[in-house]
Length: 487
Image (cartoon, rainbow, N blue to C red):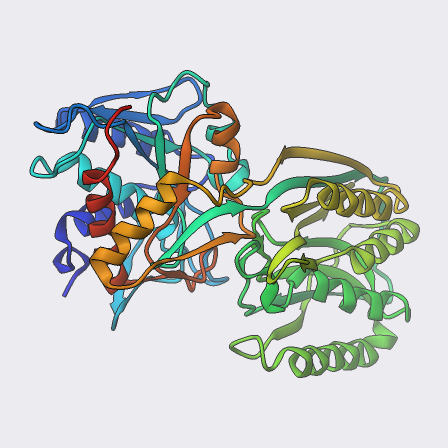
């Protein structure tokens, strides 16, 4: 069986088409044009707006002309994460999918079901002329995963609809009505590198890999190891004991993905090689003892000999940065006091790049309370400022505040109950959703988010629960039939 044999075939056929088009964040021009061509081929008004988003509009089917306009909304980009040994190039190569029982997976990469399944569902609706619905708009945004740029730049007169169905949630049977806001903390500095005297020195490449990683909103509460934090502990243990001196340090590559791997090149005095290796082994044993009940597989911490670099970091710079990374808040800061099961405030120490006289650290902070988000970010700023780094805040957005009296959500609950014999769970999530950005542009718009069941998005373990896709899509179709009439 292949992906195109799965049911409902129209949704899976559309999703398969998306997997064949490279669409990592920052490289969405090709998929945007594909979507416009698809829309026009199927009789929709379709165009790319000034923000790089795709908008498609189709008229009502006979008998539904007096319904309010509904909006199907998803994002076209995907998170480009792969295993350390994968040769996959996200800018040129299609995603290779495979069926694992009831799950669809990708070969050594993210699957792109976040949010390719939402896009595929919208495409299937556009394509199927037998469906019953009122006037319909489809908004497919660009670069949601790297900063929600398409939503931020969406003009406030683009959409005409009253009800927005965001197709970017990740558990079938749940309806999301609120989410956390976010803010990027970007730390940077330049420094004068030291010339390395290779006499009596050897070099090692320390590598941390094999971590679960995960979505920095949905899975930040699971206590998973952060490769940047682990590396900071290794460097603190070796540098402070005179066993190593840092030349370069790299870890993580996506602001909203818990970093799965990282590496640092260090100088080691030949006379202390055995002590250095022993410390690496000690750290490895410690990490695996601490995370044995959380990480799926053994954490890999290795130190392999490499060529001695020509340059290294000054001692004070390496000490300050290691200390800052070690001290910086990472993970859950606190849960919502009135809903203790849901994270309120967290941070993800996402990316570290130190080489060639430049150091950069990127952290994504999230909170459903703007005051707590600012408190967290100011604390991070204080931490890295003391290390001599310039700290800037970028891409801030407030959370999506839940409307517990939403007529749309009430109607969705009734429809779901009639279809499946139970009411959906209504909740707020710690992940960021574009509703929080689109909503203020359209104050009268009613909105909710839902989707099929995905696990481990933003990692190469991402997978989609195949039976949930049919339930999700049939719910979309039934909702469109039940959009209220115009007042």
